Image (cartoon, helix red, strand yellow):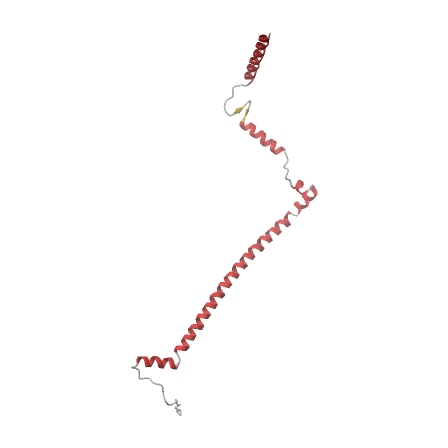
Length: 157
């Protein structure tokens, strides 16, 4: 009796396997059932378009009235953004000019210090005592310091 039951169960399993394999048709590659891959992609794209986005303006801001108010003020928002861009660019330009001014002032101070140093050296080398010292170091000069003060010659016209 157990054999009969076992045989019936095996026979039912074989029939079920045959029925299941008969339902699966032979499919060429790229085809799913009666639909191609393009049909499946198109259907999924359509389903995505049908569902509304959870991040719409009206949902984000809390209602249609607020969304409409924002949409009406979009020109003002764009104008404010444009002014912000202009403000930031002018600030950078001003900072760049301030750096150039500081660099120029530093160069001017350096040149002024060099001019003062050169003037001091010129003044030192043109003094009478320095000139006399140079003349005496060469020894062959006939120039001497005059013992009499200069006098003026007046010519009548």
